[in-house]
Image (cartoon, rainbow, N blue to C red; front, side):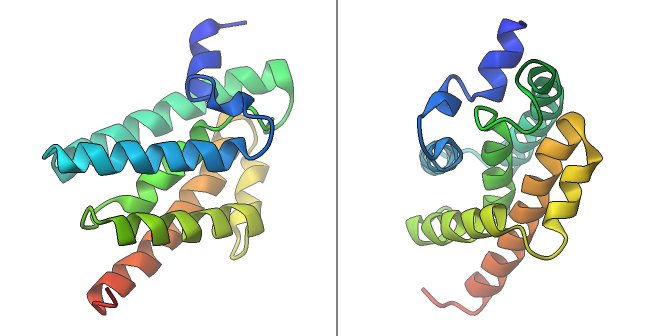
Length: 151
């Protein structure tokens, strides 16, 4: 087993959480995103981090699927990447992060609007792309809410 693929795909072991590993990884991503944003990192850093997570996720999830089986619960890098997509280009405020987390987990779990079809891509792409689409839907809704100045 490739140790790097294991560490990446499980988000440094968060995927071993007995229940709700995906939610734990999404929450951890929110916390990192918040504090990185408070530290003054710009949107360029968010784009770079998201891109790196996506690339690492496609590679590591594909490798670990061969070991563990299709879209195993321990693979949570997809949730981290999807959560990053949810938060891109938004003001770093706790309200945005909380609503983003709720929206993302809804879309990721319920898989409406063609999200489930992304899993048919197979391998690392199938693992990652359903969360990419869930993140895109969540981001679009959040952008609208921010534009409406609801908080």
